[in-house]
Image (cartoon, rainbow over all chains, first blue to last red; front, side, top):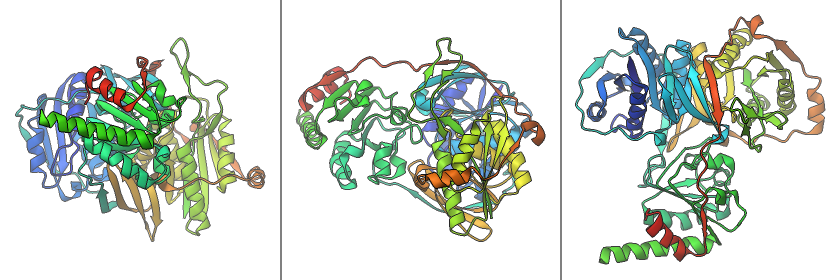
Length: 323
Length: 249
């Protein structure tokens, strides 16, 4: 049994979610090959071969993999999977934007049904995944010889590093050359990434404006070294970009601490954060559904409570430093 | 150019579904149904392309039971020109839907297919990418802006932590994200007009597509519930709890 894990990276840094995908792959049972496809990405290969539990790193380097577009990568994966002497049983990647774009394309090419966002591996062919905005967990058994799955990174621990496995260079597959990257903008804020931050501070429509959103939440996030998130309502109202959206159709997060500010708690939002370890809700509406899942609920005017909390955190930090 | 839009009939997004006591399925018997919200955005975008003179015809397709005709009528009322129902009572998984749409695309020869990025019932988010693979066409998922040009289309798409712009050679498949547009409100006169628009019916058999499931559903269960939380009275109390009890700050 061999399992192919798709590495997620930007040609310079291996995305930490890849480590979580390796753990899920190990639970499927088998020898792990990690595929790094990119361009001038030797640094990524160096990081990949140190992941414990990975047997080999397969490295395909070509200019047409530089932008991580779905069409050329799907061709490569198809070639690797079809050409392997020792047949692969699984293809695994973390369920972010990258893999959700790529793996269904690979699966359809091979005539198999992919499994999206697995949160538990019950056996090599049986997986648990959320449906209906996380209100239902369904257990599905794959009838295909090859299982193609994306896994929710927060549901699996990160694989440790400390390994040292061989690297096998791979020939590049044909470039379909039917799509081209014109521009890419990543939000740079010096903040931790929403998907892997230890603390997430999220705001909702009750913040009232983009200006209030920044003015109130950024200092709070700064004092906790937190990522900033938002409800769909806040995104729709134009307070922040869609890349901050936490929810069923946005990012799924599960930090140590999630602070929901002025968020009512629609099921679509809750689907994206309910697996956080500690949930704090600050909302003026005592009947808001968010209080149903919050560990600590504070019914208060957020325009007073948030600055007060920020001040207390700053004071606590100062006194900790003094001590 | 001809635009094909795939729409799915799902449980209304405001309905909170529950698992049946025996764990065999979800209890949605009499729940209100609606067009999948992302598919609504797809229809809206296609109709706007037609209004802008870019699209010559908008064809909507739904796969499923006869009641999916209601969903197709809603799309026609939004401004689509005609509809095709792939009529089947069989359980359709995303791979089967992609294969049915593939067969219809061979028949209809659209230049652009627009799908919702995911359905809010199975949350799979697979069909558009799989259709693009079967057609061997380029794809852009999570689109927030379309700019059709000569023989190509520029698509701005949402990615983790930002956005990117892709140029795709036509024909192509695009899936919609929330920021693409705001679907229009359907007026009563348009609803009446939609009743006169043609709805064709085909079957998986007539399209030569095998829709047998590749995934077997073993059971369904509600997610584990969280222990009840506590209400605190002040920011100071909240701080104390987070520090001493939860130990997160």
